[in-house]
Image (cartoon, rainbow, N blue to C red):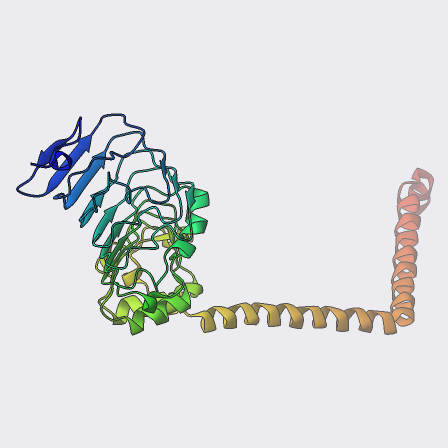
Length: 320
């Protein structure tokens, strides 16, 4: 048996299934003596912070036949350009539960046969911004399944869904408020795609209109019944599917806003007319007010005179 067919140190090998498993070893580098017969490599719970370019291309002169590569829970922070060069047969790549801060635009450059890519709970803020550039449709044209759960994504990080051959897109437990009209239109065209969107804080206003009608008219969202409104407070916790069409109708909302504006304008005009009438009749109003004042003053003087007469006792005796 060839030396390079032996199992790497601190790993467990199962030649019958073609699996090499290296778990919880706190290794900081990838093993460089992976057997040529291996088709599945599981590196889990180690301390590999960087995947350098050509990380899997130098294996003591032997070419790898890996179809499945699991690198979850390794604390990976950086994926450099051409990191997976040398794995032309790779069909499944699991990078979940890492702490990625940098993903090169050419990170997945040589993975034309890749079918499944898992990046669940792996992307920090900087890597989120870089992901859309790394997901090239011309490179990952055979990608069927993409999982991006738990990454605080606010939008779908794919500029063109039709550039891929996606069948499953998992976007659960992110920060998506609305997937936007362009993505909805793309999903209408890509009938084969099944999308998972639960545990996202959807904003149920009129901007959700196109997404709402897509949910109503399409069966592509597998967990549609679990999509809940997070805003506004009046609709919080209500399933999106139970909303009325009026709740997401931008035309009605705009007409209501316009009606309030029009009412304000009418009231303002009435106020202006009233002030103009007062201004144009200011002299007559002033004269009227002066007359009222004089009349009131004369009346008060009469009351005052009568009061003085009634209060004088001498006048009372004369009267007797």
